Amino acid sequence: MSTKEVEATSNSVNLVDHEPTLAEGIVIGKWQNTLQELRYTFLTKDGWVGDYDYLYLITPNIWPLNKKYKDYKAPFYGLNDRVPVLLTLLLGLQHALTMIGSIVSPPLAIASGAFNFDSGMTQYLVSTAFITTGIATALQVTRLHIAKSPFFIGTGLLSVVGPTFDILPIVFNYASLRYKTGTCSTGPDGTPTPCPDAWGAVLGTMLCCVWLQVGMSFVPPRTLNKLFPKLITGSMLTLVGVYLVGNGLQNWGGSSNCHNGEGFYALCPDTSSPRPLPWGDPKLIGLGFSVFATIILVETIGAPLMRSASIIIGLAVGCLISGLTGYWSTSQLRDAPAGTFLWTHTFHLSVDGALVLPLLIMFACQAVSCIPDILATAELSGVDIEGTEFNSRIQGGILCDGLGSLFSALATGPPMVSQAGNNGVIVLTGCASRRAGWAASGFLVLMGIIAKFGAVFASMPPSVLGGMQVFLYSTIAVAGVRVLALINWTRRDRFILTVALGVGFMDVCQPDWFASILNYSGSNQRLVGLEQGINLAVETPFVIAGIVGVVLNAVLPRDKGEMLGVRYGDEHRHPVIGGRTE
Image (cartoon, rainbow, N blue to C red; front, side):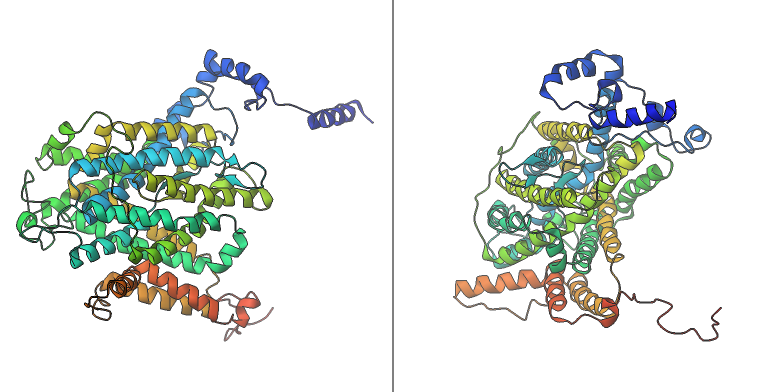
């Protein structure tokens, strides 16, 4: 054996018992080295700055400025790799900025679009969403082991947790039902007044129903996928996105309240606003378009740091234009407190039977729909995407979502779900380190505590928010289409999808089609509650589509072509006329 071969063999043997060193950029896990790790991180230049090319993060994608980085690939940082402190803070902020749009949209829609809360309550819900998102994301990234069991809480990946959009169709229809039945009051001119008790009913029912998702986290992922295949979850996501785009467009035109509104809402956003206009006025449409166009422009030519924050930049441009033209009053921002925290406002908790079935379906859908997002994050992070470890990450992610929703409801916030919106940041920056996730969590909690930050979103003109919401809600529909693209498209799949989407689109196109079918007005309150629950389930697009899809998927026999692995459209199914076999 040659000298080189001996050295190579010796090196390979030594690697078996090799322990990582500080110089190799891997965080040392032994507690004895904690002090040495802290000294290296905070007392050395390499620990603070490292050798990362920070200019790459701020270089616009415009020639000739981007010439240097045309074929540049950022260095990759794994889950537990050491990231310099400065880069950790920058990338943590980048992940936090990426999440802002998806964090603020649900509470804003709940507060203003459903229950007509005032600006103070709206600001509180936005701040609550930031705080609960930060805490849930930190738990997801950390991945805690449940003692004396094979189970975990969290994925241990840089996967973020944020408010789910699935709650919005349920809340909108429930609020409409409450105002229609008189359990939420209206003013003398018919204007809806704030209805905090309705939100308290949603929170109380969530606390009862979320245990379904917690229980499903202990079910093997393969079993969950059989009960709720991509065919079902993809169609539900698509319907949620399509339904919400309509709501976002209502805000883009001025506000959902002032569309054909009267009295206080005869003009948009209301008659007390600085420059009220009729719904759909070109000036209001222009405000929303400024946000939408800015998002597209930033994504086209922006630097990596800008592209991941395209939504917040779009909102900033819209706010600037609305402020300069007199459409945005900052009085609410000035009156907001400097700081806030959870439980500054509380709600009377109750349980409404009408919400049980829709919320159970929502939590069941969330338990399955987060699996593709966790898979995508795991693949980008360079870890196994199959096997026992990956299955435990899925189990931990579903459980973390359920516990996050439980904690959020106790904290008066909306339910939570794992999201993949930050995966683009991982691709752009090459950083999948959990350190960036913890930094992002800290920034999000800080954003929530600073009440002025939440007040900015609560006081924005609805048209500005609408431009952002249409873009953001469209990404949900696109996510549903992406999931549907993974199915086999057999005749059976197409039939189930046609029926499920057909029923769901009925709700989107004509929301009150079912209103006269169950219209009991007697004194039996139990029958009234049952009727309201059925109406709410049928009139919420993704709920009725999920019910129909699950039932059909269970009863329809499998196609022979599906069992043989033949896909719809395969060219070898039939001979081609005029074709010739070589």
